[in-house]
Image (cartoon, rainbow, N blue to C red; front, top):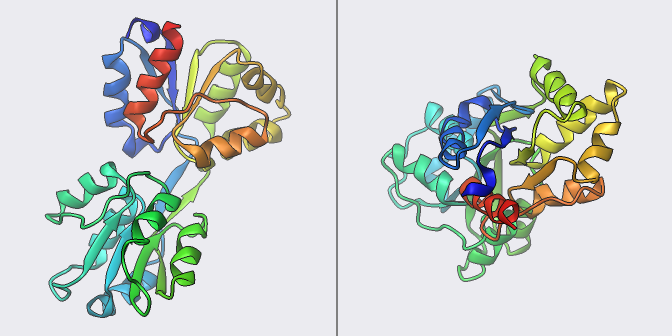
Length: 258
């Protein structure tokens, strides 16, 4: 734990999801700096209401983020679907589901769309209806994979993932990178990377990429999909074996101790 002591660590996830992350960073003796490079907003409710209307026809419901669960329970309840089974992408999403009194039936070993598809390989889903409320900017790996196995997938626009309207904190982060005022940046999704680097480019400060590429500031990716975006910029991140914020911190601590 001494490896992170006193280090200034930027948390790029949405502000409403950063509370636990801040406490984790503090537990390592580090200094958390919450700088959301992504903003989650409600979508128009039409698609969620449509999904609610056929909830009793679904065999499975899949949640790939806590935010999708929050959106779902704004409009839907499970009273009319006692036989419905629910899968979640990982333990944090499972914890959010249990806040609504529901336990997931399936959590994959690997917390990615690919991990979910692998978990569903053990289940016969041909001819089944599967509801998938999510942001529409998410990858299509999961719905395509389920359809290829014969399932009918009903997508519903649960929320929007966008660059923040107020970019002042992103501008401040860019300046802090250029002035070497931070030690580590933790990226928790592909968009947290893309939004930061797009803003830097739009501001004519593309040297941000060079500093991250040269490891003058340590970069961490929560999992392989986020890492893939960083790889496209030739930025080599630290990545944990288990794709959670806690494991990302632990991996950073190990790296900094060496």
